[in-house]
Image (cartoon, rainbow, N blue to C red):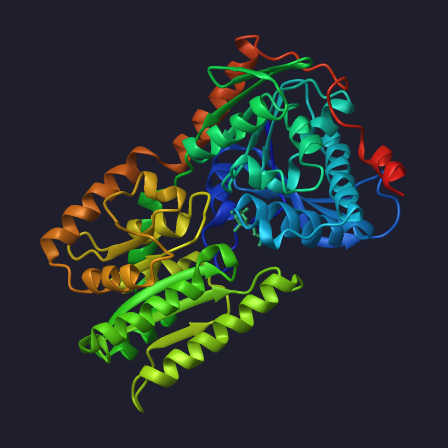
Length: 482
Ligand code: F6P
C-alpha cells in the first residue's frame, strides 16, 4: 500500500516549529513512522500556469513531505475566503460570521481541482488517499473526475453542525454532494456524524443504512474516529522540557504562585473572551486567589487578515488589560498574555508546570491541547483539567471538570475548585483520563481509519462512477459564475 495523506497545513517536523495542538502536530508522528507521503501547502503562492503544480519534496522520517505552491490568483479566496470565512464559522455553529462571495467559492473549488491534479504525480496502482479537513471537501470529486479509482478517505477535524447551520453556507448542497465521492468520511464524534447523515437524508433525500450512504453513483460510509495523541511520547517530552530555559524561567518567576494555563489559536471558537471573564469573576468571588494564582494565556495569532479575527485580537487584548488593571498589584500580574506560538518541546513543559489546564472552547472538533495537558502531568502530583463540554475531547475526558463556557460564574467556580482540589482526587481524575488516552492513541486512530478505508473496497461497498452526481468541475464553475 502506498499511502498519500493530504492536508492544507503540514509540519516539517522541526523541534521548535510552533504548534498548538491541531492536525499538523497530530499527523506528524504517524506520517514519519508509516512511510506515507504527506502533501500540503508550502505556505507560498505561485503565479502563472496552475495546470502544472510545483511541489518541493523532502524526506520526513520513513515518509516524505511534498509542499505545493498554491495558485496565487485563488489562494485568498480559498483560504481566507471560502475555507475560513464561510466553512469554518458554519462548522463551528457561527452562522452569523459566514461571509462568502461566489468568487471565493470558485477559488475554493479551483484550489481543490489544483490539488487533485498535483496528486496524480504521487498516484501508484496500490495507492490509497487520505484527505484531511474542511479545506478539501470537494477534492475527492475532483480526483474521481481525473479518473482516480483508488480508495479515497476523508477525515473532518472540526465539528459538523446541525442542518440549519450548514445550510447557511453558499453552495452547501453542491459541496456535500461532492463529498460523496469519498469512500469513507470520518468524524470526531457521534453527534458530528449524525448531523452529517441527517443532512444527507433530509436534504439530499438519500438512503442511509448502518452509516452507509447510497447514491446513484456509489456508496460512502460515514463513521466516527476520535483522534488521539501519543501520550507516552508527550509525557517524555514534558519531563525533558522541565529543564528548557523558557520553562525554568517561568517556574522561577512564579514564586510559589499557582499557575493556570490556556493555549489556543486566537480564534473565536476557542472561547477566550468568556475564559478571561471567568478568571475576572474568579478573582472577584475568591479574593484569596489573588496573588496566589495567575493565568498564562498563550493565544497564537491566526488568520489575521480576516476581519472577525482582527476584531477578536483587539477584544481579547483590551479585556486582558482591563482585568489586569482591576485585579493587578505592583508586584503581581494576574494574566500573562502572549501572542506567539511555541514548539511542543516547550509547551509540554509549560503544561506540566501549570496546576490547572483551561480548555474552554465554545465549539471544538476534538481539542488536542486538552489531551496534551493531561499527558504532560507529573503522575505523583497531577494538575486538573477544566474542559468545555463542547469540545470533542469531553466525550472521552469526562473525568475532567466539565464546564459550560457560556456560564461565566460556573466556570469561575470550577476554576477555583480545580485550584484547591486535594491530591487524591486529582490523581483519581488524572488516572481515569490517562486510561482513556492510552486506549485511544494517534497510532490507533490512524490504523483504524486506514483499515476501515481498505475494508470499504474489500466489502465492495464502493463503486464511484464519475461524474453523474458530482457537481461540475471548478473550471465549469468559474464559467457559470462569471
Ligand atoms: O481544527 C482543525 C484544524 O485543521 C486544526 O488542526 C488547525 O489548528 C486549524 O484547523 C487550522 O488552522 P490554520 O488555518 O492555522 O491552518
